[in-house]
Image 1 (cartoon, one colour):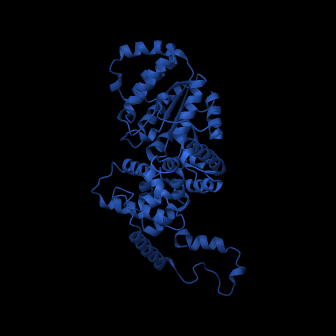
Image 2 (cartoon, rainbow, N blue to C red):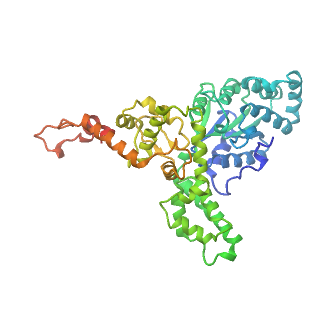
Length: 443
């Protein structure tokens, strides 16, 4: 099965980009005394798989990479968890004759190992051969969130947590969106992990990398299609406009480049469509980002009963409030305004960590991954599943009514308890009183 880094399914990072992130991963790989597991996490479209591909290539070139498995929801055999350890063991046997010598007798005495549980597969196929040989190796597993699972905690990570301390000579580099079952897996106490949130890398560094990507890829288009392009193209202003539209997401830059490189129109005309509508994400949607959002929502709610109107009513209330509020709201503020418990809101948000930035703290604001998600989910022409569409006019009315109800319940005369004989300018603790007596939701 072609699921490894050499299968040609992913492109590496453009030379000169993601250098700080790759340097951090390679320092971790070289240090045998620190955590055996590295989790590169991040929201959809921030470039995790591209980094994984690049690191796998570097590790292979240095002779460290024993095996890799790039999960994908698009291929049945690459979204099947029960095939990961089998495939990794097969690749490790090709990588090292010594490993193969240790593995073959185990397979002969366990011919039906493919039917064993994941922890047993890991112990027989990976742990025992490494313990017998003492080999050092790196294993890369990309996009773990794209595997089909039914358990609340990732079965792959649960299995790894049981055995990872027995093979400290093996480094596991794993990427995945911070979905609930993945986050729960990495919280298992025995799975000591180094984490890097890719979406939190300094914005100036990410913008510089995306600018390099845009300049290079559009330059390649200009060279390849120079018969239809005249003058300096693209301009610095064009690059700046596109960069602003990406909001730090490589996937947005990639779909814009793909849109511009349409073979049946001039690149100049397609670029003009993008830069003339700097606040619109329509063309990014047509180029592929809408497909990504549809896949994420379908996968996130596949276990929810379609006939459960209460859940989808609550989903619309919570998500609609997040995407339509002028100022980002925290989980606590949402609970106050919507009259829902923070627990219910958290249960809904656990499905959406791929498209929303959801802090662990209930008092920090929840942010949209990218404006294109808000545009997608509020447009029934772009969002193909009616269960997920947010009816913006209806929701604005609903949100307004709930705000008025909150104000009617909470507002009182002299709400901050300031003496009528004291000028406000003389009260030193007005901000503290405002936080105490009014709070973020009522504000």
